[in-house]
Image (cartoon, rainbow, N blue to C red):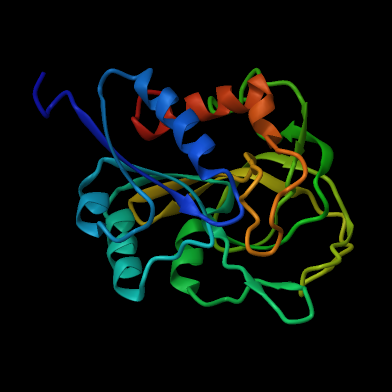
Length: 249
């Protein structure tokens, strides 16, 4: 089987405050279902040559940002026809302030513009219903509304995008600098973002956290959290996202 049949994928799985090991393993299991995929794995964007050489990228990170030079390479790769399946905290920058609040500074605007959004806040983890916005789209067709007990991402969005999944929530997110979310607009949970000749698929669901993942802020987290990973619908979305990235959906 030569390179003409092989599809190279680079998985970036790393960061803070999440059970990255769990997410990495689950994503690798799904990648392994596709015999044409050859995967490389890293914890950040430091191996930028390998990342940009891959046919597509998958990321599951939290507070992991590329450098300015790496961002420029990533933007160029995407403009030239790359595909990027971004999960959960890929668009997050987190700063814990002295007063205990969390700030999400806009420190890498080119990266967030490419992804199409930047995380700014979330309410306490609680069940909410995810609904299909575009029922005829193959990425979400046939998926019924489903309930997740997950972080509900409240983000600033950039540029052209097609929302595929959404939910509704409004209120105040105490603990975050940007805490006022009282508008009644739908909250995007999954979208497609064209970028030059390339395209980003962003799925915000998929929070997970283990016993030691909040150190040094909390020594031992009281209960493990698995968010949307507890639902069959989330795994179906992941499988379809991988096939989309392979151009086989």
